[in-house]
Image 1 (cartoon, rainbow, N blue to C red):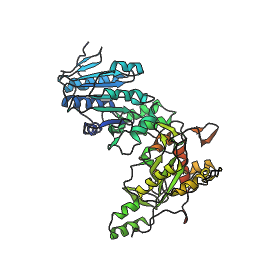
Image 2 (cartoon, helix red, strand yellow):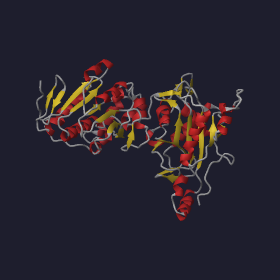
Image 3 (tube, helix red, strand yellow):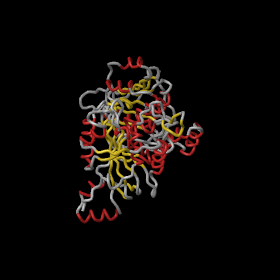
Image 4 (cartoon, rainbow, N blue to C red):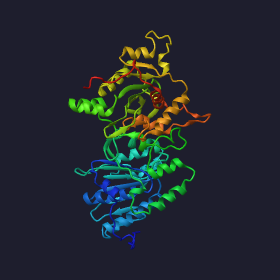
Length: 483
């Protein structure tokens, strides 16, 4: 059964500004379309398919949703766009869910819910695969399997496109792989699992000029009146939200996430002339301070952060009020895709990696660590802290005190990020383990003001130590020979 044209389907169309940005990305890059609801991501996919068909004839394309019912909206989008774009020459078989284009290309609208559903794609090749509403998948297993179908003839690029909103069952794995990576939105990055080069393309309902934005916002608010976190995710496209999470009310991607630093402030100064250095230092009115914060683990992950404390200065285009803490690098020893399982590294191996991380930033491997590593359990080599010292890494006890006080300090700094005159806590997108765990940690149901320690709280613990740390003359790590 072939579809027929309607007056609505034949009306002229054009991409939005957001969709034009997406269309401008080179075909060699895979795409992650992530953001709030109503951002016209599905329309962006339709435009991507249209451009691909125009450029590469005789290719097969696959669009996938979790259920056939979910395909209905995209079917309507395709009818509206393709009938106009191809002057009625494109034909759709609604029984087989297949579009036939005049130049020999085909587009199949498919469903993938259970592993048995993959059988219909086994051994088939597609030059372009698009997975919409990927947040409905609890894990990426079946989506990753589809990559084996990504094949094309020579001189035809292959492309994988994933679209998702925050707040779904797949929120955590999507955020880890495509949002909190070592790159800013619209900049290429490598997906560590597939090895593919991706570009993240965020949008919200405000990027969609074809809807009544005020009316749509009212609809979003009415659809989740008692779930502020979900509303925040849908409206702003914020991937740090996690309903019921301990830090959900104080941690946001917009305020707390910063692009990866290229240099520390003192490394940047070394690139300037002597005169420029004096001007820069005078504008700073003080020196940046650097230290490590470490939570030790062997069977559990070990996490170490390089932290800078701002004197009240700008660095790489952003101003950080005095006392702000910036987590600018991270070493986490979690097993691949296992956030709560460590690699079992020995202290010498771990210390070597910490020294290497510090050397890249030209800072000393000094800082604070969990009090437990200073306890002597009868080992011939002394304490774990002694082993670190012998390997060139110098830690002092964090003096953890009350966990609750530490969490409150951390929450306060997180909540003040973005303020022009209050110190805040800022975390580089390079710190992927932080972004994969901290936003999703739960409260302790027996002690609501505390964090549930059964989760992967190792990054959170290291940051808590850093928030409580006060640098003094003994452990101060800063560069005083810039001029």
